[in-house]
Image (cartoon, rainbow over all chains, first blue to last red):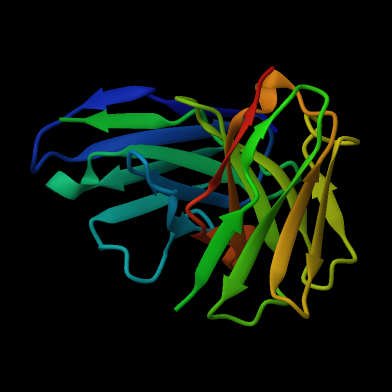
Length: 105
Length: 117
C-alpha cells in the first residue's frame, strides 16, 4: 500500500492550528496510526485506529478519517509539538509509513 | 514500566551477517512485535513483524529472504537475524511492541547498524 503524506514540511507558530494529511492508494478502513518523532529519539505513538488517542497524549492532538483519506490536527501548537510526524497503515503487511512531515517553528 | 532495549548493532562489511536483539520487560511478552528501521536522515521503514507465539512472521520485500525475525518468549527477547547485508541496510534498528489496531505502542531507543567496507 502506497502512502502519501503532506506536506513534507510545515512552518507554524506557537498557538497555531495545523493539519497533516495522509492518503493511501487503497482502502485501509481505519487501520491508520500517527507517530511523533523528535530528533535523536524513537517514535512515539499518538493515534491508533485513525482517531483513538493513545494514553497520555494531550487532547490537542485529534485525528480522523477512514478508507483512504486521513488527517491529524494539532490545535494550539505547544513548543514540545515541533517534531516530525509519520502516518502508518496497519491494514496489510508490509505496514508502510508515510514520508513524514517536519513541523518547524 | 514497559522497556525495550536493543543491542547487537555495529559495523559489518557488505555481504556480512549480524543479529540484533531486543530485551523486553514490563509487560506480558507474548504479544506481537515488530522491527522498524531508519536510515540516517530518512523516514521510517517497517521491516518485519512476528505474532505472540512466533508462529506467524511477516516481512517487507526489501528484506525478505535476507532477514529473519524470531523470538524467545522464555527470555522475553526478540531477534532480527540479518544476512547478506548491503550498504543500504545502514540504519538505526528499532524494536516495537504491538498495540491496539496493530499499531506500535512502545519503541526501544534503537541500535545502529552500519554496513561499510
